[in-house]
Image (cartoon, rainbow, N blue to C red; front, top):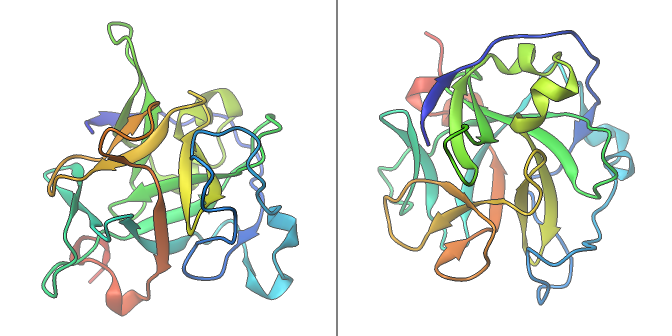
Length: 216
């Protein structure tokens, strides 16, 4: 996952959203993350008491199916075992919106105080998309028009006991980790082959945030 620059665009309103912690589901665990027609609850079905204003992103740590946590190392997201001394990266998560009828909930994700945003995109010389970190403040990104914002949008869908993150710009490509500890977080369009595509989100407080996220 490389670190790239990104520019701001035209303002557009964002939707409110909300979730209880951790993010997981009660869907059929036998379903494949790549199987179409996943049934995902609407954001509007979340109790009003659980909703937060989209202008205040929620903060989460993320774990994969092997309970490895995602951390930021040299501007690259990697998955490592959750040891007592490991400080998981804090992800700033904000509801977004698209013109697609996809059943998943569109969200934006960022790290490093919300200043590095996750993006699934490909350069002209690339034959397939890759997961990148781009310099773009999360709150500014949320106001950009859909064409600019779409590579940063991921559909959160509930599968089994966790959630998948599918690229809105590249349907069928999912955020994944490897069974190997310390490997970079990537995107894949193939289930199995040692790729872990299901994640759990656990809400964090200010005292639990990683050192790079805390303002002194």
